Amino acid sequence: MRISFIGAGRVAHHLAKALQARHQIVQIYSRTYEHADVLAQAAGAEAAYSFSALKSEIDLLIIAVSDSAIADVIQAVHPYLPNTLIVHTSGSTGISKLTQAHARAGVLYPLQTFSLEREIDWTQTPLFIEAAEPQDLMMLSTLASELSQRVYPYSSAQRLSLHLAAVYACNFANYCYDMAKQIVDEQQVDFSLLYPLMLETAQKAAAADPKTMQTGPAMRGDQNIIAMHTLMLEQANRPDLKQVYALLSEQILQRHQPEQI
Amino acid sequence: MRISFIGAGRVAHHLAKALQARHQIVQIYSRTYEHADVLAQAAGAEAAYSFSALKSEIDLLIIAVSDSAIADVIQAVHPYLPNTLIVHTSGSTGISKLTQAHARAGVLYPLQTFSLEREIDWTQTPLFIEAAEPQDLMMLSTLASELSQRVYPYSSAQRLSLHLAAVYACNFANYCYDMAKQIVDEQQVDFSLLYPLMLETAQKAAAADPKTMQTGPAMRGDQNIIAMHTLMLEQANRPDLKQVYALLSEQILQRHQPEQI
Image (cartoon, rainbow over all chains, first blue to last red):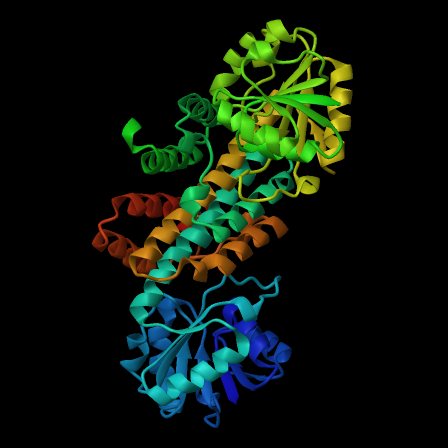
């Protein structure tokens, strides 16, 4: 297949590198030409200066831009590629954002967190696909199955629920690590001491129901420790951390020891 | 060394099993005799019916009970073992809780989350030791170094900061997984789809500063997605999840895009 990209961010970067093994990456367009050029060189493609420079002899255009830009991009691109399958990669944007401007629309959503520095194990990354037309769904299914063992045709509504859950399991969990680092940094204690705990916590939750794996003072209803931690956060003058501590402890307590409230 | 335990919970279980390879586990005492008996059989020890039944010909007594019970236990045990090194395993209890009743006191705190179903990699688990007397610190250092490559003499104040950070990095991160599971359960979507994301998030944070690894709508300042997620949580009638979403998103936004507030 001949594939072009709109967007040269983290998702485009990882997808282009992974698809390159079996397919030809033709062009990369980005609002910032330099970004398109960097990715184009890495993926054996060429950078496009404008939407009008996009070649129409391709099988698939992948829009990997921020959610808020998708509607504008499809409006601008459609006139140049009216008959090409065009997909976006977003968990939280419905396929309708594309179909309102373009008939051959689809979605290829990888449920993973991407950073430029780290390789992704694509074979284990769940890929959720959707398409307006059945033959395009078949084509996306074939393409996705080359990358991953876990390909699922999901509706926009199901993807939305997964993406919301991912905000908790990924973005909020990472912010918990960030808060933990701020606490140990304050005492010149090395954050790396917490790595085994962080990894074991994630592995435990992935091996069983995280509700049954909950530990800590709030789960035990240990009000003495909770009061001491609260005092420590007050003395450190960290109302932000204290607010998170109070809310999450209250909810954990409620979930595990409702009779004590 | 000859070692006995007070407590037969998760920490006692994992420690006794690990120490058993090189040392003799003599007795286990628990408020619930059956629990002591189960661990005693697993560790080649005998269960003690009462504090007065504890044999005094031991080198070390490990108190692995809940924080709130430590003060009572040391008071009750001291008369029977007045000259024995007695340690607790708590991150958030100072050594002074022991020294006020017993001179040869110490701490052996493993920074890890324990569950009965899962094996721990002791060699990578950080162990924090403290003792009232220098020769006891030497003895604990030798013992701890047999278990782990990461042994640190830490004061009670340093341990306290680590333990508070661990509440965020472990207990609160796990509650984020728990909330994510509740969201996908509601849509009959399989929670296991989120495993690669959870594990990659933890591995990323452990490979670099979690602040720089932050992703998601709040980090990007994407108010459209935030408003849509908030609406979804309202429609699902989950004020608890909505409250967490609002607080953490606001703090992530503030930390990453302060100029937009």
